[in-house]
Length: 87
Image 1 (cartoon, rainbow, N blue to C red):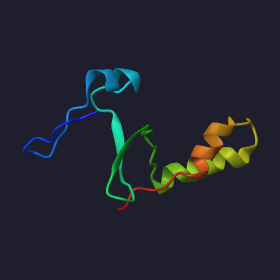
Image 2: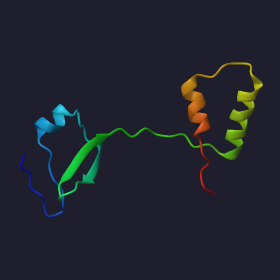
Image 3: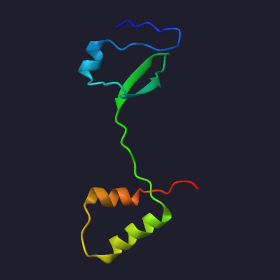
């Protein structure tokens, strides 16, 4: 499929490609340079992350250690991967 680069360096993806890949305005694509000089575009999903203050992380840890309720596995994983915002 032939596309043209405009003066800003942008390309337009044909509607058929966008429809097939379910790409919407704001969709993210990963651009890779292939051996031999080719390009590859791959759709990627970006999921927002939650960032907590040290105080917020401490409260979550205290709740986890209380043992009064079992947290869902996905939430435990998010808590394990939580990071603090730089000060």
